[in-house]
Amino acid sequence: MTTERHRAPALWLVTAAIAAALVVTIMVGPREAAGVLVLTLAGAAVARVIGRGRRPEGVAVRAAWVDAAVLLVLAAGIAVLSLSPGVSPNQDVSRIAPRAP
Image (cartoon, rainbow, N blue to C red; front, side, top):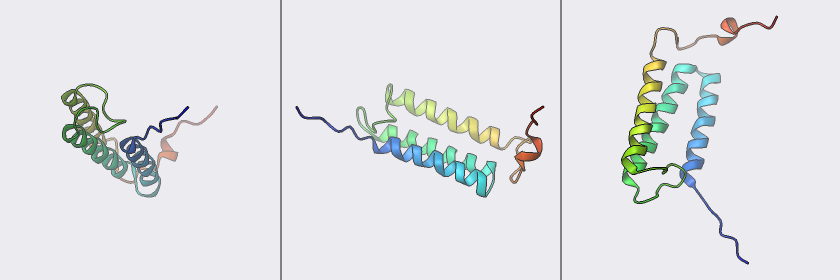
């Protein structure tokens, strides 16, 4: 019995970008971390349009144009929300977090 290894490098790249966004949030700020997420989503959309068939694995779910549209809408939404007045570049979230009773 042979087992087939299933690899999805695009999925690992997206996972690494999410981890990088977490580090950027802690080290730099939330607006820059949102930029990392926006670039990741836009890159995944471009990869989905360029990829043929079910490529890249881990990103391809539906038809290529649907996947690309969803990824671009999510990127645009995060970009708009990160530029909203309530998100300051170096906001200290510990001061606005609710305190436990």
